[in-house]
Image 1 (tube, rainbow, N blue to C red):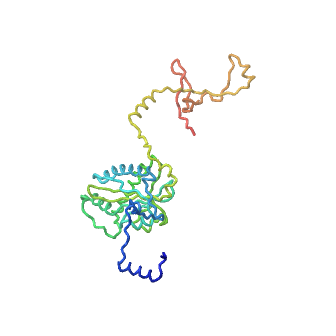
Image 2 (cartoon, one colour):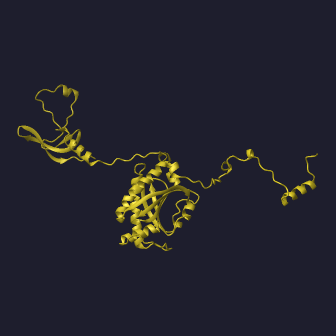
Amino acid sequence: MSELLDPKEIDALLSAVEKGELDQPEVAAEDKPKDEAAQKVTPYDITNPDITLKGRMPLMHMINERFCRLFRNSLSSILQRVCDVELAETRGIRFGEFLAALPLPACISLMDLDPLEGSGLLILDSHLIFVAVDLFCGGSGKDSYKVQSREFTPIEMRLAQRLIAQVIEDLKEAWSSVQEVDFSLVRMETNPQFVSVIPPEEVIMVAEFRIDVEGSVGKMVLAIPYFSLEPLRTVLGREYMRELRQPNDQWRGVLEQELMRAKVELRPILGHATLSVRELCDLEVGDVIQLDTWADGLIPMYVEGRPKFFVRPGRSGAYRAVKIEDYITEH
C-alpha cells in the first residue's frame, strides 16, 4: 500500500477533521512536558531596560536611605509634627515615560549637580504641599484635598521653595561621604514640558520617597540622569559607605588643654653679617662685627623657626629681655 495519499483521500481526511469525525490521538504521558512553566517564554523588551539602582548601584541605595533619616528630622522640625520619610522605590526609566507618568499638578524643581554633568529633578506632589500649607496656617493637615488643575498660589510656591531648600541641604549631607555634590536650585516649574533635561529615550535614575505627616501621605521624587552618575559608577557599585566621623567636643577640649602645655622655642635674631673666610680666620677677642640692623631698631623673633614678632632688645632686672612691638605677617 502506498504511503502517499491521493487528492480524494486528502479531501476526505480534511472533511472528517472539520466535522469532528476523526479522533485526535492522545499524547503519551512521557511525551508531555514535565514542567509546563519551564516551557513558557517571558517577553523582554531590550529597548526598555529596567535598570535598578539597588542592584547595580547599592551605594546609591544607601545614600538615599541616609537622606531619608536626615530629611525625616528636618521635616519634623519645620512642620512641628511627627514625620516619616521612607524610600519607596529606586529604578531606571526612560525620561519620556517618566515625564508622562508625573502626577499633575506638581512642583518640579530643576537642580544643578556640580561637579557632575547634567541637571537633576526634584518633584513634590500637590498633596504634600497642600498639607504643609495647612499645617503652617494652623490646620491639622488631615483634611482631604481635591487635586485641581491650577497653578500653585504664591504662598504655596514660597513654602515649597523652603522645603526644597531643606531637601538640597540634606542631599548634600547624604552625598558628602561618597562625593561632594553641590546641589543647587536653578528654577521651579509646574509644567513638565519645561524641564526636559535629557532626550526622551535616555534613561533617568528615579528615587521615590513616601512622606507621612501624621497620617497624611505625600510623595517626593528625585531624578538624576544616568549619564550624570556614570563617572561614579565604580564608587556607587560598592556595598558599603564610609561614614564621616563627627567631631567629638570632649576630645577636642582635652587636645586643646594638652596643646596649651606644649613648650615652644623663641629665638630673637639680633642681626646678620657676612664675612670672607680670611676675615673669619683673622677674628680675635675684642673685634667688633657690624650687623645689618640699627642699634635702636626692631629685630625679628622666631617661634619654632617661623617669624612671628618684631621685638626691641633690652633688659629685665639682671636678665636680657625683649619687648614685643608688633606682629610679623607672613605672605
